[in-house]
Image 1 (cartoon, rainbow, N blue to C red):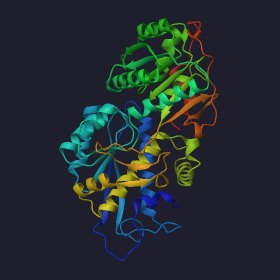
Image 2: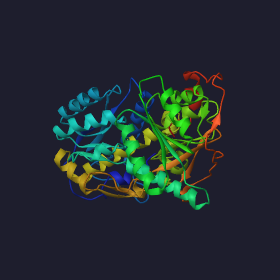
Image 3: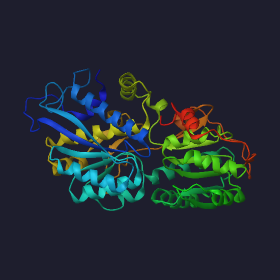
Image 4: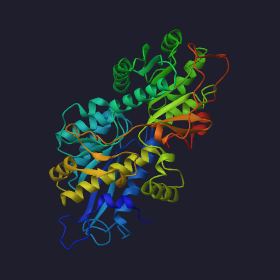
Length: 434
């Protein structure tokens, strides 16, 4: 089965001979072992599905196969996946390995913000195109790199979405939200803290507490106590691999449940947080893609169906992002009619895709001077019952159930035990990354 996404990866059929032939490789950096191996597996599947569609290249209404890909072309796309092990140094070393292979035209990945920082810096020195869809870290596009491109929304877009949501609430007659920030003591956490501080001041939503925690640590009691004392309406928190349940258990151990928690980071961690007793219907998450919303896009709907058919599981955010970044690079190769890395980089600079040429709920793909996709967009999903439902933007919102606002949240019995990690992970499956 071939879908319309292929139109974003091929030129119209013509008589000219392409300069591209043989096996063309796109490298995927993903954590196949170590933390977030589930995300790495999903990214690998999404990238592989993109290559299957591109290589099929069958004619269908509105699409003509090009001279590069498909049965009428001379080239076939191959995905080369290297394991970052969720380690920034290893990710950089693997990026160098890919750059040493002259058949690799570009890199996509690498999910984790720190891994993406170091891997893209190494790719810059080696003059290798690198397209990220996963890491919203502001610093990634503030470095003035020539070879790095971010397809997904950045932290500023996430912060603007939270601001817009707060404004919507105030327009409905509710007061300004009193915000607390529970942030990981790393680059992503500091990015959240600074971005939220900027947007909250603009929106008139006071920051009543700002508490750091160590991502690899186990004691969050000091941070939780600071937030409980501040009695916020909303807690914004970063969530990297393995922290969702840890944050929820820390709040329960402190005898306190915030009225609402908004998760910035890995979507699966928001799902794991909802599995902690008492957090049902209290958790929202910021995402660049939503399974429910994507089904309204014919291109995305066909992709989702094929993903389910090929892999026996629903498509996830990580899979959708990998699929998208691979098709972006494939389109750049097509536009350049070359696998020369300099030519591919120039094609990425000039790329201008409409929204209907992607499976994402965006307005398209167009990179600005910093190589940030200015047409990317953020969705906010809220946990309702056992699933996550889109609540922002308002024109896409399916439903919204707010916890009853209260300055001190809910007091709970700390002796009440949460389910163990394995059980919580199982409870989160199916909605964790979609």
